[in-house]
Length: 522
Image (cartoon, rainbow, N blue to C red; front, top):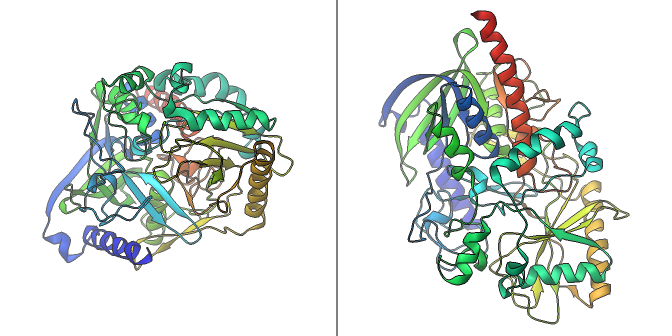
């Protein structure tokens, strides 16, 4: 496995090197010139999609740079590859897949990427829509008590609850799984988890999911390609059941006529330019990752939304290269995994744990005497019958950090997996699962797995690198609007809803201040 990862890292390092300004291999690629735009957004995940829509609605001419390609759902139901037949569409510029099994594939700009760190591996999306292409579509709002444990007091839960969470939900329109779908064999594992929680005296309920359940009904009826019901989540859902951002926020942004999305644009550098503006350099690549053009954009306003890893890496590079000289020493710090872990629970009967996605049921053990824990049933393609593979989330301390590696021209990620806090979270997980095992006659199939996360958070956090509205200290027109802003955890929930809600809050503040500035200038 390590050899395969090294092969992949070599390929990506080669691409990064060929994409760097001034390298000889770039001189052979055409220079695409310099463009001027009022606002530039880097990334099209939850933060970037929110920024794009609100900028477009305000009439601000905006370009969104996205490293990945578009993934339109086809009538044939073949947009994405499947777990059973993976190909290059599964993985970002890698000779092998990076989840479940290392299967040889063609090198392609696929939907799922991995960041291999010290103590943790991070999975992240690539494509127009970012992580929404590959996530479990869970729209989960934290409780006020836990929210206040994580976020600064200046972010009022009441305002988030009454304004920003509802605003995001109004566009994503998440809803719980209908009973008649939950009762099918496809969602047996979800029902079993809920039954086990009841026997153990634990609270469980349905999650709000950004899924079109009518399309899931069509899958069950054979009218659409079976995808969600077969657990095909992490490479994309071919039936179109998932309400990914390219089908709502980003579509609405483009419809304003003021937003242009540029796929296959890999940003390499950001720098301060004349009169407080910014210049962003990027490489336009083809679907095999080969650089076609080098371009630069000059903008008045720059919004960073490349995800926790991507945004932090860009800022670390700018700090190292002194292209953003006023960045402080907090860049790269206060990073966390959202407390992600995976269990294997052995039962005595059939479970169908490979089927029935996305996640639909949550167990909320918020009064766990060690630490609050929530557990969700997620489908995984390699889980045998008789085994459940629930994923737990917790409030982890943001003890991780990223540093810049000038040789590789990328960020190194460090996570103290054996810290006292992480050991405490592991014990809290064990307490919850042992409570369930005792009540249900089940047992552990293996040790808890904390080796990876799909919920990276931090690196450019509020009250450290930025204020609570995402404005970077020292740069009034530079903003962070993605998961980098959040210190390590979204309070025992999946992060997407909170990332989007905070981005909505950031954009409200920006547009309010910008409109007042423009009125004064007039």
